[in-house]
Image (cartoon, rainbow, N blue to C red; front, top):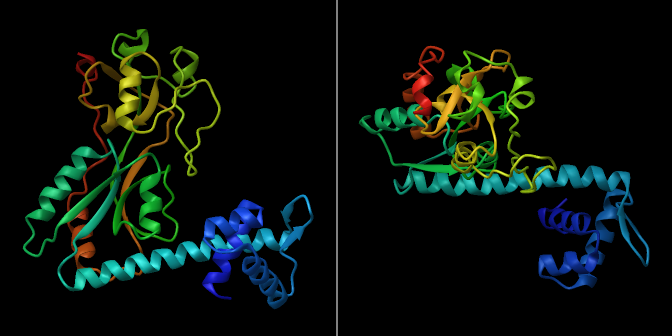
Length: 296
């Protein structure tokens, strides 16, 4: 099966319309139809049910759509990593590190400073991204290494080293009645605060339905909390030194472990050196400070 055929089929399967798929691919509709028919004959399976009114996926077509997307994703990632490796060999390319904006800031700063002091250090481009995006950037080859956060990010199929484990806190407006409590439980985060949790976009960019405000990144979230429009349960380091926001420990929230992750097939010396530097910064589990000053 050729990559071109997979791209053709995925376009038709996603659009469920040959005309729109042809326009998306930049080709005429007749050769697209012929290519799909040839693919079906070669596989010995009907992939699409066609009528004068609609195009629908068969069960076999649904399987090929799922597997085809994964295959094309892998091909694109391989192309990006190959180009990056070629640039690295000429000394014209550094390391791209993906991390969620507003997360692990203190740890990231220490890592960059420590790595820059290494004798063979190369440039590190920090790719700040939205919630959950750093894993995708690493897997598709746009990043060489990433800071991920278990249990929120999947590390399946990646090599990782744990850097820090910390508890979670409830972030509230500094003047909220619960701000002075020594701790709360997850059920109280919305039951007692009277504030909704934020809604984050999914992989396709759409927001789930619900009462909370939409949030694209942590900077936007912090402003919503400070204005009394939302609350959030976040790793404790995210709540440190935020003006106008109080952080209350959540007893039954799962701990969050920050890991540095990279593709298992990476042979980059720069990535290996960066990981080695990161593991040298491993700290004890996060020690809580005084929260009373956080809202001042």
